[in-house]
Image (cartoon, rainbow over all chains, first blue to last red; front, side, top):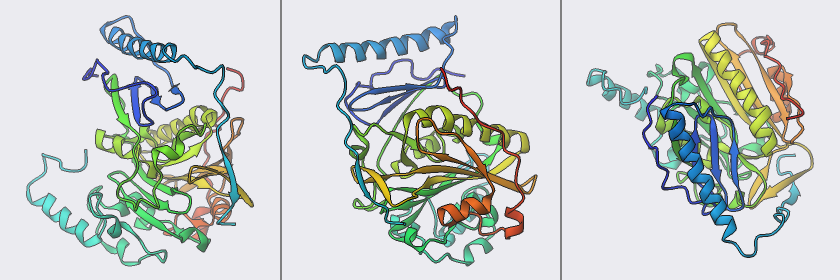
Length: 90
Length: 286
């Protein structure tokens, strides 16, 4: 295992639907209305663990700052808009 | 990993490139060249398979799945990537199947601690047919991989797997727990038996469907495995819901349900040999 990119400058929370950061088996996905964190990772008591922890800490710090900066933050997201259509294959 | 190996003699890549050009299927080719007519071609499987490069390597016997429900063939295009091939539908704006040949040696074990990737629209598809990131935005659905990122042996293929041509709208709970467990079980099986052919896709069943943006939400998902060593196969069939349970179904039954002959190279009696798939469950309380 090598650590190629300890810093994560590219991930701007809630800015796009594209960015993905994987740390161990943890996957962090950028969405416009959420940040999805799934999977798992060991933050081991070694240099690698520190690097991973800093990465996640920095990212979560950005998430918190971004949400705190929104004066109109709702209590809950509105329900997504999902349409119903006829099945074209039926 | 397989492509552009520097260890290979110089002549070999040229030969492989020529074979790929003849087969008319290469990941960098233009979209039109990937489009396979709904009626399957016969000649393809007669080419000697170049080492891991041709799309036909992703299929049992070199034969791509064939639609038995002709409605599925409308605006369907085959897209070849390094280690998987998808059949993309311009009707659903999703893949209808995604085929991989998993080999134990290529399932990465040690990867770098952190890596970046990005979901992206498939620019090889005409703009009217492909899904855009905006279709999924604020939809409440995950972008669910069909060929999983975790199967990908190299960075290029990992990037390929994040193409929206390899994604369907999937319930998040389902994607992150039950489906992730199925993907893990498949990799474990491939490591145990050396290789597996895997075909993954959505099912669109019933009279009505949900739609987000212009993307149709599948009612179910399937993952078929064919184990060449055991000469047997089976599939998991899973409703696209949060509380879904995985059913294991014989291949012929799955093919009838979805209207696709997924393994056309195999005779029916082979497909009836049911592989003992592990029972995949997720804890109901977490």
